Image (cartoon, rainbow, N blue to C red; front, side, top):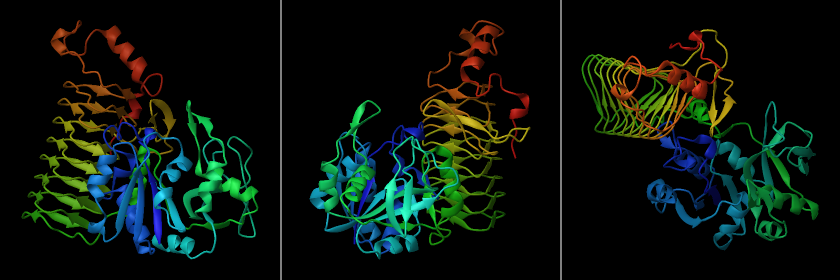
Length: 446
C-alpha cells in the first residue's frame, strides 16, 4: 500500500514555533509529528510513501531521507506555492499508484483505525465525531447507511457532528475530478481543497464510504502538542541509554538518550522523554508528560512539568517551567518563572498567529519561539507568546504577545533606572496584555 502525505505547509497557527521548521517537524513525545504518522501507517501495512513538501522542505528530507532508517520507501515532491490540499495532492500524481492512502501531515491516527480504512473497497473518507464542529473551518459530513451523502459548504448550517479527519483512501480518478473543480479564493490566493474533488466525485454518482475513527488527534494549535504528549509518550523501546548518577530517582516511564547525564539529586517522574547529549541537574524535578530534545542543558534546582523543551535550549538554575512549549536554541536566565495557572482558576487566553484566542485550558504556560533569551529573574504570565529571537533583560514581567524587538538597556531608559518611564510601561501593558490589565491573580505555578 502507498500513502501520499500532505506536508507542505508552515502551520501558521503554530507560530512562533514554526519560524524555522514546518509544523510536521515539531516534536511530540521526543519525535517529529510526521515520524509518528509514518510509524502508524507502516504498522497498518503502508510500505511506500510520497511526501509532499514545501515550507522548510530540507528539514523533512534531511531527517527522513529515503526512509530506510524506518524500513519504508520515501519519495518527495515539492509544492512550491501552497494552494490547498487538492493542489498538493495533484503534485504527487506522477508517483501515485492506482490506489493510495492520503494523509494530512498534521493528523495522527492509530494503526488499527488506518487498517480499517485500507481494508475498504473503493474510495473512503475517514471521519471523526467532534462535540462542536466549526462550519467555518471543518468539512462537515452527512452520512447515510455508511456512505457519504453530502458535504456542507463552509459557513453553512451543521449537517452532523462528523467532520473529515484528513485521511482518505482514493483512486487515480481523484486527479481528474480535481482538475474539473475551479480554484477558489483563499487568503488572497487561488486554492483547491481535496474535499472539493471528493464532492465532484460524489456529484458524478461515485459511492464514497465513510469510516469513523475511534482514535484521532489533529495538531492545529500550539497547545495541541501538549495534549498529544499525553497520548504518544514515551516511546518505551528507547530505555535508559545515558548516564544516571547516584541519588537520582526515576519513577514511571522514562526514556533517556545516549550521551545524556542526569546528575545527582534529581527526581524524574514520567512519562518523560529526554534526548541525546543532554546535561540535566543536579537537584532537578522533571515530571508529567515532558519531552526534552537533544543537547539541552538544564541547571541546578530547576522544575519542569508537562512541557516540551526543544533541542539546544539552555535552562539556567532555579527556573520553573510549567505546561509550556520552548523552542530550540533558547536561553532562559537564572530564576525565570513561567506560571501556568491563574489564581481565579479561569481558562487561559493566548494568541494564535498574532490574534487573541481562547485555549479552553486551565493550565498553560508560555509559547516561546526559537532563540529567545530571558534575563535573570524574568516572570512570564500564563498564555504568553514570545516571538522567535526576542532577547530580554533582567527582572522583566512578560505577558500577552511579546514582540521580537530587543529592549533598550536599562541604563539608557528614562525613569528610575529599573523599569523605565511609567508611561512607557503603561503603553507596553496596553499593547501586550491578554486582558485589558493583567490581574495579580493571573500568576501561579503548580
